[in-house]
Image (cartoon, rainbow, N blue to C red; front, side, top):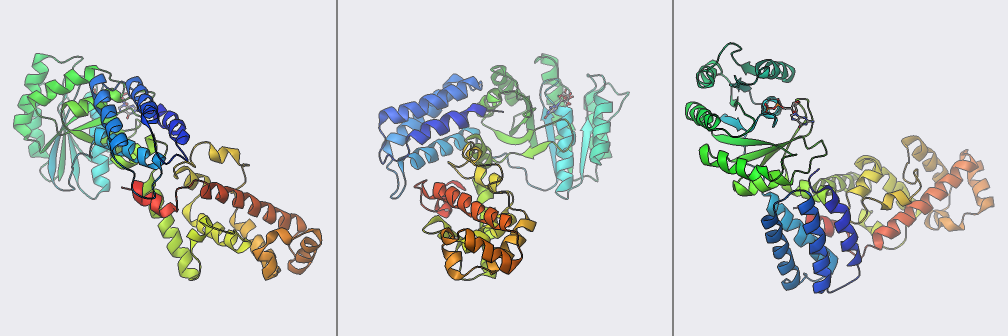
Amino acid sequence: MVLDDLGSSLRGTLNDLRGKSRIDEDDVGEVVKQIQRALLQADVEVGLVMELSDSIEQRALSEDPPAGTTARDHVLKIVYEELVELVGESTELPLEPQTIMLAGLQGSGKTTTAAKMAWWFSKKGLRPAVIQTDTFRPGAYDQAKQMCERAEVEFYGDPDGDDPVEIAREGMEATEDADVRIVDTAGRHALEEDLIDEIEEIEATVAPDVSLLVLDAAIGQGAKDQAREFERSVGIEGVVITKLDGTAKGGGALTAVNETDSSIAFLGTGETVKDIERFEPSGFISRLLGMGDLKQLSERVERAMQETQEEDDDWDPEDLLEGQFTLKDMQRQMEAMNRMGPLDQVMDMIPGLGGGMMDQLPDDAMDVTQDRMRRFDIAMDSMTDEELENPRTIGRSRVERISRGSGVEEETIRELLEQHKMMEQTLKQFQGMGEGDMQRMMKKFGG
Ligand code: GDP
């Protein structure tokens, strides 16, 4: 996907900054070099790359990190903000009645996108309709009709018609009851004069509230000219980047967004009607940087914390990040983690912990099933407070005693102690991050 390599190369560079309280020109130069390389490889236009890297460089060297922020966090935050700025906000698409026109070259994914968007709006409780005006491409009618049937949305087209403008006019009348009308237009292999004339006429007929340019993620530098041409003829409010599920780089599409001074509306990630995502800049960039979706993580952690706290008022999960990790902590932690979802996924969403670190742990380090937890619970009931606070004092004879008292096999109790050790180790890595508590970190990047 776009800038796929950026995350890993950048993480390495940023990790080298860990522990430094100040960063110098060489450090910033290295970070900027990595970003430039990744962006250029992803086909982002040179001028745009230079603009972005200059801005990162200048900010990283002139802005002072806020108190308590490490140099690494500071740089990461600037990179994050500048990349969010580059991709821009998501195109505004209010959930209300409107007409949306799709433009783009043949094969870019317009017809597919029209049905996908209709499906998306229908899931938001609106009543969409697709109007197919492409009389040029054989099969466009059948394809659109089938996809709309699959998406269970209204469809208008004329298999025998040869005047797109006329079909557009009839389509608008025929779909009067719909809230959101999505007008698909014909594309050609290249930009031709008659294509532009035609789309201008359709535009005049349907008077769209929003015109979106559909671009294949594989498009390279050609995106710029195309975008400029469509912008000049019908005006482009937003871009849909399709086929992001492939190996395409997507940088050309980012360039087009910049060229048309527009923004990204949707991402296409597959061939079925459901393979569409509303573009969300902060989540998108968080993922690119290998920081996972910090906003989502923050919500999940918060919810889990709340639920755990409702059951146990004295316990603050943040204590885990400081001081001793007891068996009681482990028990609560397992409960909280079970509510949040698989721990490896949660860890992946935390900066510095994602990618790689989890691989260093045994596969089952965090795999605590409900059933095992129940047996652990029973065993812990037969432990003394001292043992719960200091699991290291539990030797072989104590394991025997606990097993006799609880009826839980010795093997399971040894597993419990092993599990505790592994979790303790993992949490030490959290503590070693030197970035204060999770909350603060998440607030900073959560947007
Ligand atoms: P149009 O000529 O612009 O209307 O393009 P189509 O909608 O016919 O799409 C061209 C081809 O790209 C079709 O084979 C689609 O199935 C495929 N396609 C469209 N969007 C995506 C996508 O997001 N992912 C993948 N993998 N294929 C897509």
